[in-house]
Amino acid sequence: MQTFRRVLACALTLTSLAACAGGEQDAAVPSDPPTAPQTTASQGVTTPPPSASASTGGGPRGSASPSEASAPSAGAAMPRPEQAAVALEQIGEADQPVGLLWGPNGLTYAIERPGRVVPLGGGEPLLDISDRTTTDGERGLLGAVFSADGDWLYVSFTDTDGNSRVEAFPVSGGQADPDGARELLRVEQPYSNHNGGHVALGPDGALYLGLGDGGAGGDPQENGQDPTTLLGSLLRIEPTPEAEQPYAIPDDNPFADGGQGRAEIVAYGLRNPWRFSFDRETDELWIGDVGQNAVEEIDRIGLADLPGANFGWDDVEGDQPFEGEPSDAFVSPVFTYAHGPGCSVTGGYVYRGQALAELRGAYVYGDLCEGAVRALTVAEDGQATSVDLGLGVNQLVSFDEGPDGQLYVLSLEGPIYRLIPADES
Image (cartoon, rainbow, N blue to C red):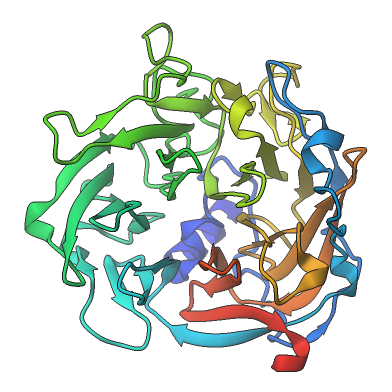
C-alpha cells in the first residue's frame, strides 16, 4: 500500500523529479510532500534539519583536512547565517524550471524540464527540443550550460527512449540551431529514475556531468561502485564538437589511460547527484546526493582531490552502512541529515555575492520535500551546522548562481526567485 501511495504521488505531482528518486525499494515518503511555508522575509534561526548530523569532509589520497578546506582567506569574515535577514524576490516564472542560464547576449534564460530554454520575460526560445524528450518519471531536459566562448550550448536531457544524452548546439544570433547538434554522450538508462543530468563548466574549463546510479531502488545493478559504467558517476570531458572526435579526455581523469574504469569518469560512488557546484573562490566542488530512504548527504572536495574520488554508494548511504560498511577509501560527507520532513536534497551554491554579507562563504541548499532554504557552515574542526533561513519554496528543485554571485531559487511549480536582503523586499 505504501509503495502504491508513493507511485500515485509521483504520477500526480511533479515531485517525481527527485522526491521519488528511490524507486520501488525505498521506504515510503508522504504521498503528498509537505507544503513549504509561504515565502517570507525573516531572521534566520539556528534549527538544523531533523536528526541532522555533522560529519567531517575528507577524501582519498591526502585530501585537505576540514580545517584547511573550510578556513576563510586572510581577512575574510566567517559567515553568520543565523544573523542573516533575507527574503525571496520573484523575478519570473517558467514551465517546470530546473535551472537558469546567463547568455552572452545579456539575456537570462530558464531551462524548462519539458524541453525548452526560454528568456525570462518572454521572447523566442533559445532552444526547443520538446519533441525529443519526455517528462515521464524523472526524465526531461535536466541541464544546460554555454561554452566559455558562448558559441555552443551543451544540453543534458533524456530522449524519448529514456536514455541520457548530452548534445552540443551551435549558437548564433541568440538562437541555438537544433539541426546543427552534435552528440557528445549517450548513456543507456535501465530505469526511469536516478538520471542526475546536471552539467556545468568547471574552473578547469572542462564540462562536468552528474549521472545517477541508473534507478530502481537500492542500486540493483551495483553501478555505484562499478567504474566500468558511467552510471553513478561524475564525468569530466573536454568538448570538441567541431572536431572528428566530439570530446577529449583530461589527462588526470583516473582511467584516462584505460584500466578498470571508463575514461570519462572523474569520480564515482554517487546515488543521484541532484545539483553540484564549484565555489567560485576556492574551486571546491559541492554535491547534493539524494539518499535512498534514510539519509541525505552533501559532499565537498577540492578540485585537486577529485580524480578517483569514491563517494561510497551503495556500500554506504550518506554516513550510514547500506550494503557495506564505511571505509577510509570513501569521501566522507561534509553534512548529512535524516528524512523527516526532508526527503530529497537539492544541492546549491556557496554564496559569494555582495548583497548578503552574513551569508558570504556559507553553502545555501534545500530539500525538494521540505522546501526550506538553508545555509550550511563548516567550522575549522569540520563541525557542520545548518541554519534555516526562514524561507519556504514549494517543490524547491534547484538553485543557480548569477554572474555577480547572487543566488536564485527555483520551484518546480514555476516561480523563480532571487535571494535578497529582507529590507529590500
